[in-house]
Image (cartoon, rainbow, N blue to C red):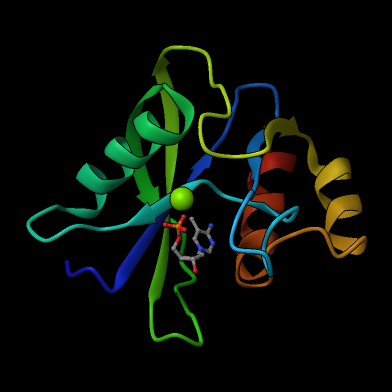
Length: 135
Ligand code: 9L3
Ligand code: MG
């Protein structure tokens, strides 16, 4: 994996919620909600990078699961991949985001309809909604 890959975590709870994080930067994305994560560093696997990023951003330790089928290419050329993840230690806090929120399917749809989801992350919503509704 190179530094042109970004990995994001779809952190699902047993009760049908997903953890969303509200970006604080850059200005054009500030205030929008995303799956937390960041750039894969040289030598890291996707899973390594996600574990590191979610530790830095949320102060939790996660176990990484399978990836969402859709991969997104950003305008900047970055490739964005999402992996399912489960928290195995810690309570999430917004260390780098404005805030975080566990959202159910209804709230996720409402945020999306309000234009409050980071545009690239919207491509994952059908898969995430299907996951949430079967829990
Ligand atoms: N990005 C988009 N959606 C996401 C994540 C984690 C990241 N769910 C985009 C925003 C930035 C770039 O990827 O342009 C790098 O992300 P970060 O390191 O600023 O989180
Ligand atoms: Mg990040």
